Length: 203
Image (cartoon, rainbow, N blue to C red; front, side):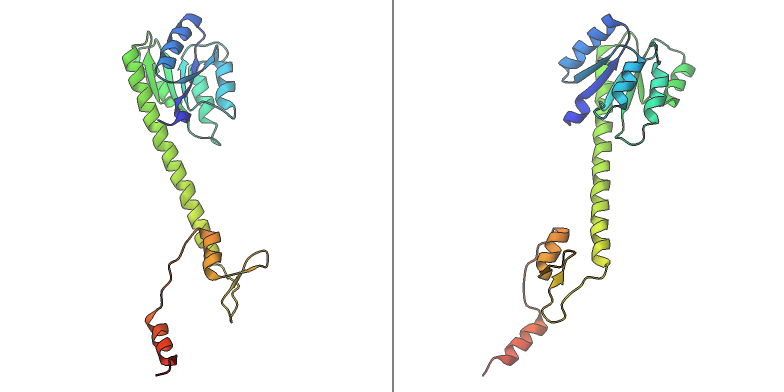
């Protein structure tokens, strides 16, 4: 799994519970960032180095888990954060409200460790998929930008066929396209040129 998706925020105002869960998260290979209340959690998730995953208690001072989920979902200028809510609530309506507020999943307290680990693995898979798709979109945009650039008028010498770049330097077509698009070339002789060459050879 990506190191990026192995960083997790654990937000719980109950110190004993937080220490136990943090211990197991570390054993499972996660780098744990702890928060003692909702405000500390919001600061961590709103920062530039925010963890990709968050395990947050429903009931916390300052900002509860649901408010925290709503806050994170308003942060649209950053990679997706996978949010799991820890809750003692079992009412389906309350759980549904948490999911509607932006939580991706929930685990009932006290935590079943096997269930918690399985749900974290689901979160990792989702995050890795999201990161992969995001990188593919970036690559596609870069490719489209290169295509658009090539569709523009390219200054080319009518005599030697060299191409002038933006800094007024002249390059061979092969060199120019390699610099602009990363494209490499193999060379051959087309049938038309081959026939012309043969016509110039004395017999």
